[in-house]
Length: 363
Ligand code: F1P
Image (cartoon, rainbow, N blue to C red; front, side):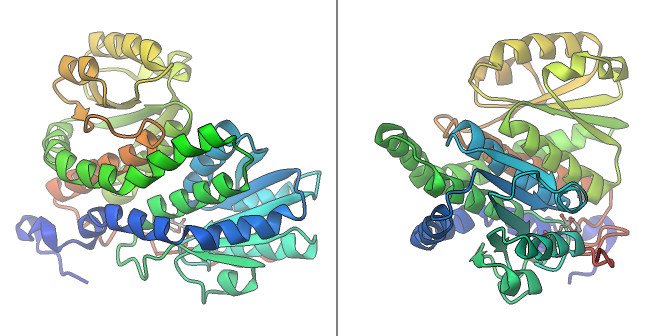
C-alpha cells in the first residue's frame, strides 16, 4: 500500500489509476473465456427461466443495472436488477428465474444472504466474482471468475467493468438473438479491448485537465440514459468515494423535472452523449444548462458536442456505440482519480470505506 505524502506522491504510484489503465487487458482476458460463460448459460437455459435477476451492492449493483439493461434491450431477455437487500426483503413473485449475483469479494453480507435465500427457493444461482474461493463463489450453483485476481484499490474500477462485461456476455449467450444481430454484436465485442485501449490512452490527459477545472466547483450532477444511466451511477460513486463530494445522478430528461433548480455557476454537470436517439434532447439540455452558467462536461463521441464545450471529453472516433456506456466509465474513473489527487486526497485510502461490507444480514 503506497504511503501518501500529500501533493508530492507521483500519480503512477496509486493503485487506483494503475488498475484503471489495465482495463483493456482485463476485457481481452474475459473475451478469451467465452466458452465457459456459454456453458453456464447453456446449463441454466435448460430450466427455461421466465426472467433473470441481477443483484449486487454498491458498484456491483450498478454493474448489475448496466448488464440488465443490455439483457432486456439488446438481447430481449426478461431482466431486472435490484440491490441484494431488496431481493431479500421483496422477493420476486415468480420463482422461475435465474439469479446472477455480482460481488468482487463474494463476501458482501446482503449478496451472500440473497444467494442463500435463492438456493433455498431452488432458484439457480450464478456468482460473478473476483474470488471463486469466497463463500458466495463456493455456494452458488455456478461461479464465473472475472479474472482480475486481487484488486488492490478499495474502490472498484477494473472489477466493475469486468463484472459488467462478464454479466453482459452471460445475457448474450442466454439470448436467442438472430444471427445477423449476433454477428454485429460479436464484432463489437471483438474490438472492445482495442477500443478500451484507445480510451485509456486518449482520455486521461483530458480527464486530468477537466478535474483541475472542477476544483472550483462545489457540487456535481451526472446525467445519462439507458445503460449510460448505470454508468453515471458508477461515475458519481467514484467521485463520492474518493473525494467525499456531493454528487447526484439523473436520467437525462428527468433532470428538467425539478433538479434543474440546482443549476448555478459552481455546479458541474457530466453528461454521457452517445450518437443515438437521445442526442437531440441531450444537445438541447446542454445548451440550457450552459445558459444557467453551470459547467457542462459532455463525454461524447459526437464532434459537434465536444467542439461546442470547452470542458468536454472527446471519446475516440469509431468506438463501439453499444459499449459507449462502459467505455465512458473509464473516463469517469479517470476524472474522479485526478480530482481526488488534485485535492490532495488519497483515492487508495478512502475514508470510512472497506473493500466490502460484512454485517449480520441473516433473516
Ligand atoms: C461492494 C461494495 C463496493 C464499495 C465498497 C463496499 O462490494 O459495495 O462497491 O465500493 O467498498 O463494497 P462487493 O460485493 O462487490 O465485494
